[in-house]
Amino acid sequence: MTKRRALITGITGQDGSYLAEFLLSQDYEVIGVVRRTSTINFARIQHIQDDITLVSGDLLDQGSLIAILSEYKPQEVYNLAAQSFVPASWKQPVFTGEVTALGVTRVLEAVRTVDPTIRFYQASSSEMFGKVREVPQTETTPFYPRSPYGIAKVYGHWITINYRESYNLFACSGILFNHESPRRGLEFVTRKVTHYVAKIKLGMETQLPLGNLDSKRDWGYAGDYVRAMWLMLQQDKPDDYVVGTGETHAVRELCEVAFSYVGLNWEDYVTQDPRFMRPAEVDLLVSNPNKARHVLGWEPEVSFKQLIEMMVESDLEQLKKEHNL
Image (spheres, rainbow, N blue to C red):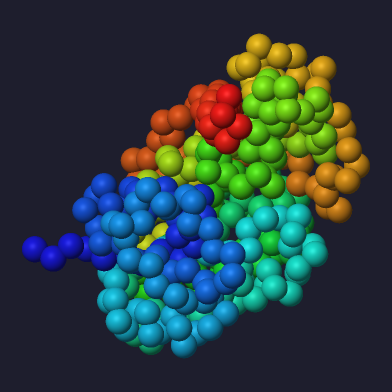
C-alpha cells in the first residue's frame, strides 16, 4: 500500500516542524516547501531532515506552487507559511498582505488547478478576533482584527471558505489560539520570557523588559495543536474549528510561573518598557474549543504550567550547552 503524502508550507517554522514529526509518526511521506533565501534556518527540522523531502517554492509565486503539486501529487496540503510575527506586520503591511492573505489564494488556486480532490488546511488565527465581540470566542464570533497580520488572516480565512463553497474543495480552517513550545522564535513573548529567565538564572542578564503585563492570552502547546490540524482533514466533510485550551492567562502570570520554576521572584526582574506596547492592543483572547472536542475528539494534553516549565528547562539546557556551563 502506498503511503499517504502530505505537503507542508512553512515547514521550517514551529508548527511546521511539529506537524512534520506528527505526520511521520502516522506513516506519511512528508514534502516541505521552503523559500529560497540567503538565511534559511533548518534548526527546527534538523533531526528529521533525512526523513522528509524539501522542495523550493514560494507563496508569492503561483507557478512554483502548481509545479510542486503536479510533481509530488500530495493528498493533503497544510498551508502554515505566513509572515506571522504580529508587530512586524505594522512595519511590513504590504508584504504581510502578499504572503499571509494572497498567498492563501495562490495555494488554493494551485490545488483547484492541479487536483481538486486534495484536502487543504489553512492556518487561521485567533488574532482575527482582535477587539473581541464576545468572550469566549467560537467559530461564529465576528472578527475585528487589530493588526495588518490579523486582517491578512481574515482574508485567508474567508478565501478558504469561498473556495470550499464555490468549488466544493475539501478546505478547512483551524482558528488556532496562541500555541507555544521550546521551538518558538525569541521574538514571541512566551519564549522571550523563558529565555530571559534562563539567562537571569545563569547570571547572564539582570532584567527582563516587557510591554503590557495585563494582556491575556489562551496559551497552549504547539505539539498538541498540530494533531487538531490533521484531525480536521480526516473528517467526512470540511469545516472550520476553533482550537485552544479555553483558559486565559495574563503576561504577569506567565512571568510568575517561569521565574518561580527557577526559584526566583519575577517582580525583582521584570520592567515595563513602552517600546514593547502595540499600536492597537488585543486585550483578551480566550477560546471556546467545544466543537473541536466534540467533532474531532481533540483535547490539549499539556497544561499552561507544564508548557512554560518545559520552555524554561529547554532554554536552560540550550544556554548551558552554548556556554559550556
